[in-house]
Amino acid sequence: MNTGATHAQAGVDGGVFAAVDIGASSGRVILGRIGDKGSTGEHAVELETVHRFPNGVVELDGGLRWDFDALFAEVLTGLAAAARAAGERGETITSIGIDTWAVDYGLVTTAGQLTAQPYSYRDDRSRAAVAPVHQKLDPARLYGTTGLQFLQFNTIYQLATEPDLEGLQALLIPDLIAFLLTGVRRTESTNASTTGLFDAVAGEWATEFLTALGLPKDVFPPLIEPGETVGTLLPDIAARTGLAHATKVVAVGSHDTASAVAAVPAVTSEGSEENFAYISSGTWSLVGLELKHPVLTEASRTANFTNERGVDGTIRYLRNMGGLWLLSECQRTWTAEGFTPDLPKLLSAAAALPPGGPQINPDDSYFIAPDNMPDRIRGAVRHTGDILPDDPAAITRCIMDSLAAGYARTLAEAERLSDRTVNVVHIVGGGSQNKLLCQLTADAIGKRVIAGPVEATALGNILIQARAAGKVSGGLADLRRLAAASAGLRTFTPQQLSRL
Image (cartoon, rainbow, N blue to C red; front, side, top):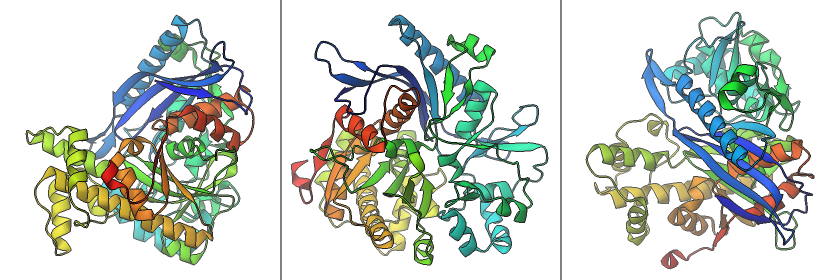
């Protein structure tokens, strides 16, 4: 996929990079090329997906887990495909960057062995750990240090369920992949900030919390920042993939949202940076603002906003909301029942329905685990005293209306709590392709919505690698100018649903 030409005010000088970009339902290995486009002298950021693979939770050993062995095998297959694709063009891959979802981890022995397949955040085991953790650490104190939104599956609660961590280290999923590629153990800071054990102001581990919970102080490896080198490929990994042993693994915003936000194309036509909000729309929706400092007030805690670390020490002030998982799970159920909906037709049918239909709370923990999602959505509507027909288009419209309304509420609260006013909302990720969702969001928020890039996470991942290699220079504003010039964007203005 060619993402288009850039005008490279950030100083571009070529390079080929591999992004390992894994979400909760699928993964990709994507090659990114930054170089001269040709006789015009323009520069281009080109993304080429060389390998796609499914991902998902499995029931294993009494819980919902990730099949990490299969996942890592797919990563190696993808890197081998990247090496072949680059080789066919006479190119050498400079580095590899890895991003995934947050909070989950694998436990690794001192000898480097994974003790078991990692639990998924969708497993319910951590629910019982919340109260014991809060007995040792007051929630207000936790928030005042970490600034982290309360979610029952945060790493702090997951770790509290582990019977014995002596001699083990917890490697967050992207760090675990990097370790298996390089033999080097590090914890990338944007993902560390999602654990509930990271000091949002100091930018380091909150060791007093580890002590209070009886966790080893070295339960996590040392921190590393986006742009720093983790290591180079182990000899056997190089041999299996066809990549050079000297190929670097570079830390990026390993929490996929951190890389996505780095690629939000928030620049005006004059080239200055916009005052923007973002919605990273995929399996989950991450809705918020980029700030210089965390908001650690009691009002922010009560509103359940999170302060996660972004690239270049920024703060992603956001709320983690329900997302398109609701629709994908409905599709899975309908397919199992013998009806495989065509998604564009389904969304068109949903768009044709009149506004003002029933809504649900997409953030309700009732929707976290996989199950018969259409029945659960209809049951949630009944609980409000309304009725939702057993019709895919009606259920789809309910999901879209509910997400858009949730986005509007969340952004209004984010502006109030941070004392900021934004003038544009950027939707990136898979949801940016959903015209119905984008238009409903513009209508609900009452502000212009710019959709794209779809591959914001991979684009941000690659731009961070490119800057680390000296192929791109400048700060986040410079990266965003490249992202804006590289992406096909679409603008939605309020109250134009009829034009879909």
